[in-house]
Every structure is written in C-alpha cells, then in structure tokens.
Length: 227
Image (cartoon, rainbow, N blue to C red; front, side, top):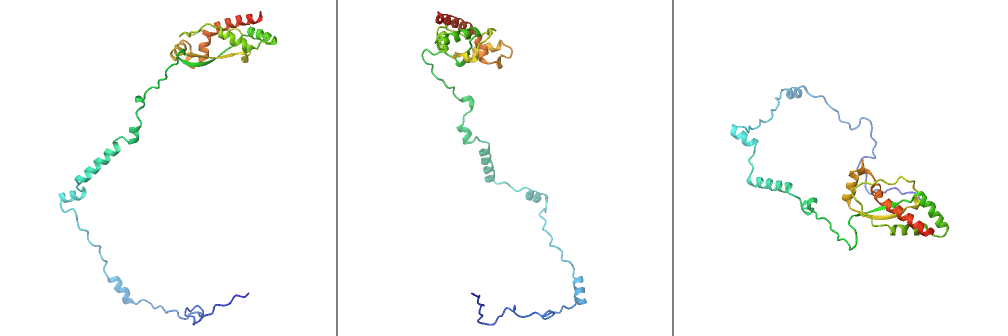
C-alpha cells in the first residue's frame, strides 16, 4: 500500500519550499567609516576601581590577618580533640591480653599430669623374626605387642637425655603406637642437654628412657608365647 502524502490545510509559511537563488536576499556589508575608527582609538581605557585598603594601621591589619576566636569555637575544638584522642568504645570492649584469665581445666582422678605425646615403640629385627614365626603358628603380632606393653613397669621420664639403642630396627609397620603424658618442663630440660635439642623431635628425646623396658618386656612375652 502506497504511503499517502501529508495534506496541508494552509500554505507553508516556513519558507523551506522556496528555491534560494544565488545572491538573493543577502545583505550588503558596507565599509567602516574613518570617524568610527578614530573615535574608538581616542576613547581612554577605563581603569579598574581601586580596592579599599584594609590595612589602615598596624592594629587593624593584625586584626584582619588573625580573626578573633570565640569561646564557643574553643569549646568545640577541645571537645572534638577529646573525641579523637579518647579510647574508642571498641577498644574498651576488648580488654588487654595481659588481663585475660588463664583457662583452668580440672584433672580427672587417676590421670597423670602433663601433655599427651604419641610415640612409636619400634621392634628390633630379632623381634620381627620371632613375631613372624608366631603369626605363622596363628598368634597375631598385635596380641603379642599389646601384652608386652601391658606388662611393662611404670616409666617415669626424668629430665635427662638417654640415647636410643643402636641395634637394628625391624620394619616400621611392626611398631606399637602409644600415648604418654610428659610435663613440658621435663621435655625442655631434656632438650637443653642436647645440641639443637629444641629442634629435635620429642619422640627422639623420650624414647631412650622407654626402649630398654619395652625391649625386655617384648623378649619375655615372645618367649611365653613360643613355649
């Protein structure tokens, strides 16, 4: 469908429809007369208005340089300074670490003092050979190891270093894991007698005092099960 043209109800008054001819309706510009140029040059320049001097004397100049501070402004400045330098509510809510209380946990009846340490009691190669023979006969090695540890005398760790036995160890999977409580100051005392003892594993500092009784009990238990 063709688009219909817009119908106008009255003549166009915009003038866009008229053709513009070259040079038509273009105003002629005349030259500037000499009198106008001379009158523009003869006119004196207008000087800016002089500023009123505010420094009439020394007292007045000082008064304008440093305005008086009212008592109200001094009070506002002091109150703002107190707010900036005073402790914040968050700082008051968090007390100093030096004022914190120490956590105290009551000890159970029969429990030994000290921190628990996990140790692995190794098995010597001669023990491993005997345990393999017992397992072949139907006695699990875990049964022998638990019985040997249960028959050990009570071990009291002393603040001295005892080196471990240099006898050849058996496989690592044959070791028996235990947990023993030792006072922290005892471990520090042992470490102080060893070169670089503060970097040594705690097990290396303690096992030297446990292994003699452990090996002796394990020998006796293997002998009992073998007979």
